[in-house]
Image (cartoon, rainbow, N blue to C red; front, side, top):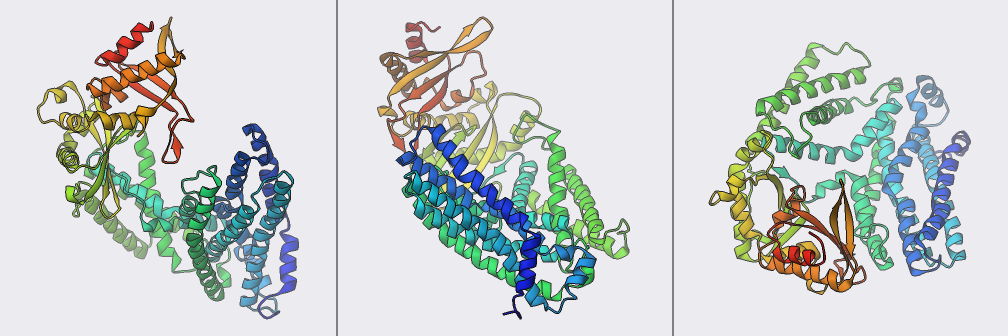
Length: 594
């Protein structure tokens, strides 16, 4: 046993680092039974009730199986158990022991798992006792989340150990570990941002792909929570546990592979790399290139924020402008990372400058590719025959869904025109013309994939008068009354019961909301709105004109126990009406609201 695991070093490690598991355990206990009991009382539930059980189950999911908590704690444990590799004297001293590297590695990993698992086991036992004592029936959930939490720790601790051994300093381990968890999604968002700038405001937001597993913290959290939001009914929570388990098991297996990688790195790691930014030579070009691209692009994004606050698209600028900015900031980031790696300011050797030149050529090639869009990704409009459903949202406030072939063809028609006229629309927007709306088109394709594109659409009076304009085509396609009523009030709009209608009243210099609380009057206002929609007096565009003087906002407080749709309750709706809403305005005037 002592050949592969060293008990005395294990005990010494725990004695030296006892404060970490103790603090972790105290934190888990404080943030579980104590705060949970307060949450139950604030919610007004008795501790053994169904509502309390739902909160119990959801709450402990966030504690025992939280990828975010595991993400933080595992890197702390990995850096702690391998901390001697970051100091030259400690590294030489530890390796002078009559113990081989395999034994040192396994002992360190065993120490880390003890610090991770014992506090979690302790809090699971304590909370089981607590929940049973107050009559809650969630013991099975607690042990289920404990098991899933341990598997999550296997992945994150394996990854953290591999990262910790690739690095020679605590700071570099932290930077590399964060990058390993979030680099994919950050680079994807950066690419989307560049496409917005280079393709005249076209926003690409396609559905999540399998590659999102490369951002494990977010991906696992999404799979664990599903649609429950941590506070849904217990059957949904149980389903989310079962659905998440296969994903977590795969991550745990990958974590075991990371332990294998970590052991190989440790086996061949040179002692003199203690204190270096990176300990393994093969990791240096990866950090230089990937770190420079990620940091450089986000520096450009940060700088661009100061150019425009008014629009989702910001300042477009020319291709040359963005190319020069990207080249400048990525080159600076490349040099800075090289300085960190070499621990010196003298990094301008001919060899490194040649590499920087190659790096610049690759950056230029990527920028040209994004600008030219040879695959026509940004401007892609799918064939109507391949579309199962099309949805259009104005400012993302109200979404109208269409599945009929004729309707889908209308949407693809104005989508193509949006692509043709997007440059002109953006130029008008950036010239300060105010009449525009953000329009998002979402296609659900026959193969199940989503295609999402977002545009700024010019909605000035000239566009409304121009025959065949995008505005008029969209207005015609989105004018179906039933679709608009569904977007505003839900699928069961005809069965809705209104408890109160709030109408803004100008009192002096202040606008206050006054409620129509009599149910018959509130229902009459609601019926008047539905009639105005049927007659074409209220349209989707009206919902976003609340700043205009001729428009007013009306809020409907609906019966929250009325109708549940798709797992959620639509109990509050705010809409905007204009001068054309004659039925609604007449009804409000009848009740004394001018």
